[in-house]
Length: 595
Image (cartoon, rainbow, N blue to C red; front, side):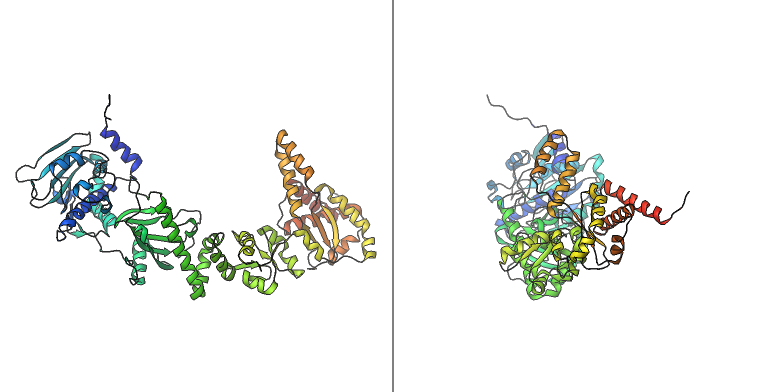
């Protein structure tokens, strides 16, 4: 035996208010939506029918209720029974003679949302020449349908909805609030909306709505200033015909967090859907704020977001392509303006360049990067130096930039966001591009070896120095290199850095993982960091002449600590202890005497 579901309307209203709608303010939008759809239905057969929606807040009605009147098609008594009393059935049905596509509503819960702010809803409606029908609904699920009492009927087709406010919802019915909400949701509607004597509709959208229409840039900039609160860097008209979408992308004038989700202002058939739509543009286009109107995109049931489907995916790709095309045109026709844009929003462009060849070429040619020979674009760097030699991290660049420059090695700083990835991607779009990651230990091949006799004389010193630093795992070598002012340089190859990380992880791991890490360490190639002493440095040469083994040890430990600090290397606990002991030891030797 089949049974019918029983619906607790109070429970449904609670569900809507706490889980579906973001705010009770949507009741104004739903009332406007129903009124606009009713007018659309009537004008489909009577194009000369008036298109007017009047809202009377309690301050104007005088009886504590809010009324909204429309000049729409109205409902018959049978349609009132079927459509107003059935949750989930839209009144915009084909039995009225029109396709659902023509209307704003889809889910048949719009009128129900009024129970968020009202205990009672009254509907007076007249269809054609038929008598006026009165429907009264209560928040506990009861409703009545009856002919309108004498003198209370409508003289013209249309509908009047009356809301009796809940005790805790008075703030949603003030004239100022209702006016603001009507203007917010319905400013672009193709009908006239009045709250009292105030017209809240402003006419058609300020952006082009047909192909080839002129763009009123001053007007759009003024719109952004008044509506969004900023003067855009630029404005970009948007159009996606398959989504029935027109609009504008405002390029933000200030940098924003790329990780922040951009909120876009979206209208559906000129009714505001949301001010914070997510997913309208690709993530990389976070520097653009869109205001669009669409006729084919689907809203969620709450009508406060866009439904993720294949059409929205295609629309997002199309809009991303239009933003990308704007950047390309800027590069070709207004390089100065592009440079200004990149100074503000380079992260977005670089993020796009990670997977877009055209954007990578734009970054290659126009984005200035930090190098040890000045600020240059990658294209300029290649033109001057041929090979793009780069440091993959900011610390690595800081450690090696000055020394590399002294050896006539030009190095690009790839340590900023996306820079290394972009450099490494360049050869995939241009095979003539040569790149090479700077290996710190490669610098030693550029240093000069010492005269054999000098090197032989320094062996006792090197032995003492090595003994002093043995516990650090560092190898001590001596070379001659520039700059002369640098007495020592600490170099760590990538394999040595890996071994250090492996050892640190081994110390923190439990017994099981320690065994795994030991096995990895056993298979890793042996490699040690190097402390490269500079024989051209006068102070270092004086240190090499010391005959006191203790003083040699203290001096070498101090040079080791200075090299770590100057190279921005991480300081381990053992290194900090060594720095402290060498400093105090040298200070003690410099200030002889007894306490």
